Length: 208
Image 1: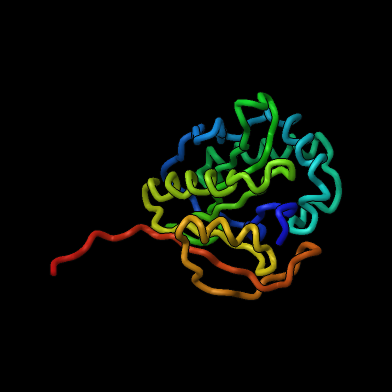
Image 2: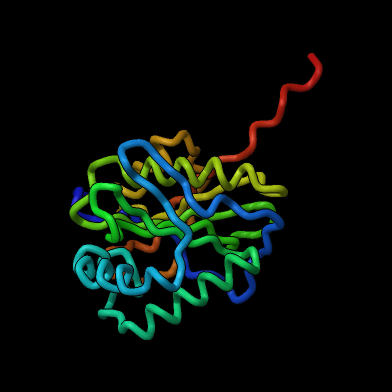
């Protein structure tokens, strides 16, 4: 996969998502002037613009990037994300840089769609910012935040087998490739073979 393609993972959520008892930090500060902030309605315009500018970049891997979003639709999804945060089922973030105030350079999320005690990380990074380690840094911070939540013992990153840039992120973070499974093809570049990467709580050593 070339550096031009997005880091994007994960299937659509099921009808019912698992509820997480705790809540992750609403803001995560990372090295290099990078930050993740909880997505709010005030970010609608910036998010809408970022998606529109990156449609060609996202389309190969993102089912929802088949056509440009409308501002009302982006606002609706942002409100739904805020409600999901309050409900404890999904935690949506936007990525930005101090050097580019007000801009959105990617979107990340923790999703309660893979069963109890687990969260899945999904993400994309804008075309102009790939190859800088942003996805790895942000996914690493979200991994730590997820495993610090009460009752969460497992974090997954899922991506299509052909999406090499996405697969590089969990590999760099020390995830293990648990399995390769069949999945519905929902975007043009997908193969229908999904990699499931896993990181779990390390249990303390027992008596020897």
